[in-house]
Length: 440
Image 1: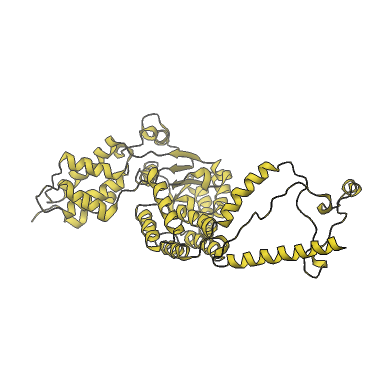
Image 2: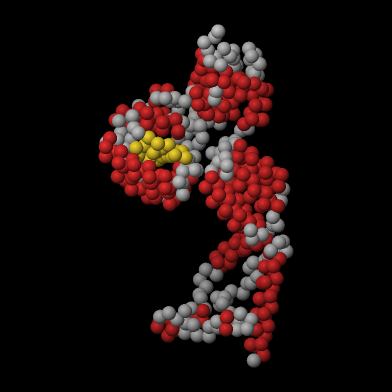
């Protein structure tokens, strides 16, 4: 009987091949090379609070675990998508007590730390400052936009790069050797197929091993896999998507345009194309919030609150449980009545303010809050709208010299039809009041 492991025992490859020390780690030479910062942590036996920032599959989590293991530090891992502030504070208090007894700070490892809200991030500050806790976070999002500045000032941000082709070849060869050493699987992969797998990995080592695993499990035993098999696997199982480059903006634009065009099928297709490609759901939700005003606006007043609720709900649950919220939002937005009236108004107003940038506030609507303004006539002639039966007046509240009007032009979709009726009502009342003033 063969002493080699069964096929199931060696998968998933990305987990089984995870390096356990710095000498096995592949990539990020600008951080791990001799004399570089991560290597110096190990050489000096000292670790400071850091954020590892970079695209998926580049070794952020792996390198974090290597540092903790090689420095022999106590550690605890948290997920930023599910951890609550109460349990975090409790752990950090225990960490402070542990350091007093054992002398070693606790390394608090937080995966996808950008999912923590600002309130939770603030809770880390006193412990990171005192050195009772070493905060080690990973993120795929730019920390400058996602994290509390006070906390960032106490951390070192180390940026990870997509793996080089040389790095990916090394990982590929390690995977093939591991399969051959550990099992009876007979697999030979030609250089053309290897290169195709590497091309589709987009600098992501985990993605490369996932494709290799699918190729091994799909190929007939003893038969060399060909390019067609790889193409079928990549298209059906993974799909190429570079969330750090042009793909991200091409796909989010396609999603936006499909929603704007009220094409629910296409909207769902592009949503899941991005989600399955590994896109950060919060990146998509932020665009959904924008769509709710730019392309829907007053036509459906529920669109914006729904998107804001989806953001809060997703931040509470995270993936995969929270992914369903995005589908709900996209279906609602794509099927909602559409209006770009607010978007058009914004562009119109920016041009108008350029034209009338020096316009002064009329004195009759300036509060006479001090004797100088009062002496100049501030507030004189002001009419309080609620004192009048129609709750409006003929009083002019525009700056002198601004002759344009009708800045917001609602269409007849959804609730925006009601907005149009309201605007027409007020316009009619004001014209009637002005007519009466003229008659007098």
